[in-house]
Image (cartoon, rainbow, N blue to C red; front, side):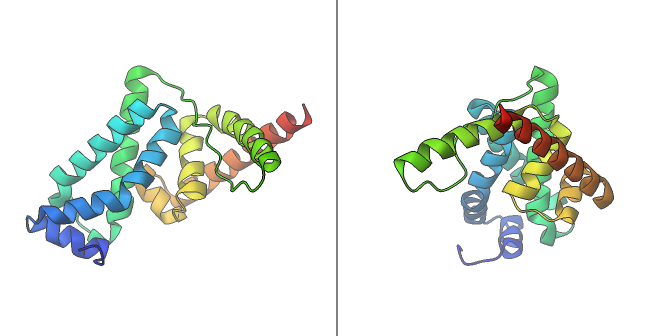
Length: 179
């Protein structure tokens, strides 16, 4: 089943083939967890939200009207779960300090970790609505249309928020590196 498309797996899952769920889970668990972790900054909350997103996906798969939008739909489920958690626990999140860049030498490793920590700190203080569009676009590589579907906003709103997020982040990073 690993070689099947998302659409084929969704159809199989709708027919009751639970192995299709396993493949979808393996295919998306890391991306959904990473997205949740970056929004919450808390591994435990991210794990819970990821688990809840997949349970909700499994329970609601029959309600997905356009199976070509499965990926976007799954991100929307995870996003809704995260925002529910953020509202309930009033968490403003801390980002994982793992570097997203490749390191080659001990010196570049240290430099990259310092840079990643600065960038993570800058991203951490963005409001969630700006952080989410930035993460979905830059880390998850979703299109503007997909982000709009996840957030329930228009593409123009997504582009506007992403532009504001990038500008604010660039300004904050510039100030941080001057210090």
